[in-house]
Amino acid sequence: VNRGKVHLNDICQNIQNDFSEKIQDSGQTLSLKIDSELSPVLGDSGMLTQVFFNLVGNANKFTPSGGDICISAFAANQSVRIEVSDTGPGISPEDQERVFQKFTQLNRQNGPGPQGTGLGLSITNKILELHDAGLSLNSELGEGSTFSFNLPVYELDLHLETFVADGRTGENNRNHDWVLVFLKPEKGHSDLPIGLGKEVERLFRQGEDRATSLIVDGEPWHAVLLRTDGRGAASFLARLEDRLGRRQGDNSA
Image (tube, rainbow, N blue to C red):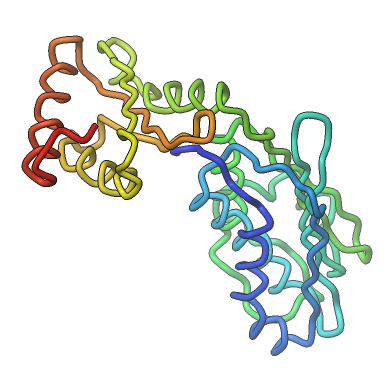
């Protein structure tokens, strides 16, 4: 997981567009109820897109023709509450106890279409666990279902904290030296943030080093987490400076 600033209204709009044909073919409606001034959240954009895709896909599968599916997002203290609800047949209490387990096939006899692999909700729950969030379910037979979770409102300090914590996750990473490096483009190099990101990634050790983009006081920065000591970080910066100097003809970062 690589968390950063995520605008949920963009993801939800894309999901609505992606599912428009399926929703129309199924005779359903898919609506969005997103607060107009919804704050950005801290999350992995790609993974959260998968969460919405799985939840809406599940609702589309089990909601009969004429039914409604709704994605809601609204402020809740220092977090954003997300709900995906449907007017399908609901989930029995016994199924609710195992709904997030791998390979579970929900027994919704009134639901149209073939059943899936039983992995979608399990994967969705795992992704949200990586975001320090939990997926909850509220459902009654004949009354539809609502899946919900909370994500923290984006803050720069929290971004950096989770960036370091996510990078050091795993048994093999805990006993290593780590160095956090901040890179800021010089003024006059407005195109550098994209180029700098590519140059940084070329110097990475696969599966160990990682980077994220930040906006600090309105200006772009990069934070780079290196699994090395101070000497290794100095070597990394020297190689990066050499690459940028050869690319642009001068030292630009």
